[in-house]
Image 1: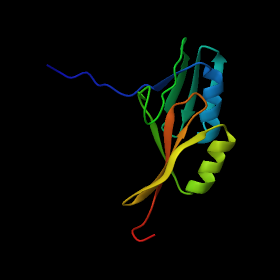
Image 2: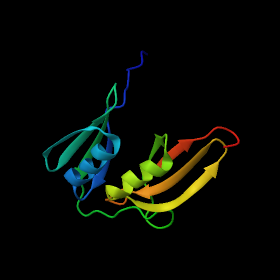
Image 3: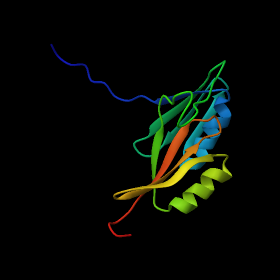
Image 4: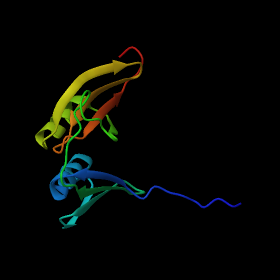
Length: 129
């Protein structure tokens, strides 16, 4: 039996406002926004491009991190300056949920995007810094 190749098409977020949440991630990740359909919006990031998609969900209940309604997924985003990236995320509407947190080799802060999805900004660190 031969295997059929499978590749990632998109990471899709359910949310109440697809164009608003897509705009948030396009600004945060410096991506290309397509918000022509109010029910399904896309952000393309990087080269090769990763597609984040946002679809309207009604009714919508946001995750409550860390306790409560569970998260179904979250993004870990690597940054070179945790403070500056955190200020930018907050300026775009993100809220801090926890942190900064430390583990060997990295430091991170957990945020909620404007629809309540948790995401982490992660800064890799050299040992001893």
